[in-house]
Image (cartoon, rainbow over all chains, first blue to last red; front, side, top):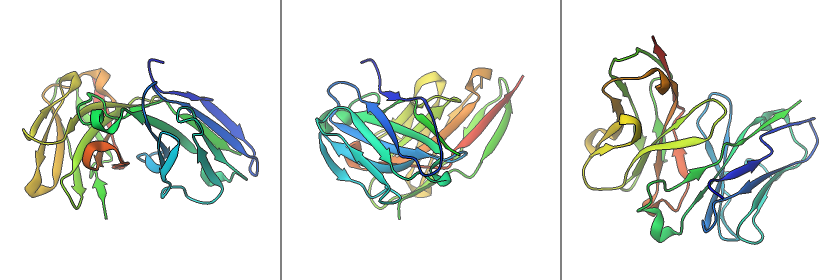
Length: 119
Length: 114
């Protein structure tokens, strides 16, 4: 597609429910990132994929957070047993192959995010 | 530890006035630096980036930024602000080749007075 697509745009869940957030990166982008943006804060890194390999998951706040990208394209961020502190905007970004990223006008392309509210 | 500090949480300027948003970073190696803008309910749009070379970088929408290694700063400037520039601005630092994660500052909210 023309850009990074995230769905749903808004998600409301009750505390304790599981949620799944989807990211469709730009076709051909091998790198995919997830960020969490709390209200009034800058985005914080969660995890990074290169193709289907999850190379960095150091930012995942707990074992309730799980991300996958089984075929190296679409990615899903899953949060189990949600808690109120999980309420945030979850941003997905993709970028071209490493050799091209440096010369790209926009190294990381961001989606519009999923706003998650936990009641 | 790698970090980015944006000292000004909120800035208000009059339309047509000049603008400077401050950014200081802490990074062990040569940093790759970025400025992003975010409008309400939207994702992040890249304004400009610095990888190497000329320390004065031109971006979109009339923005520019200057990398000063001695001050660990990458301040964003615009000579004349337009009402449509009102948004949230984020400075970020990334690793070599930008294949790694970005570390963002807290952001600066820009309000433009008519």
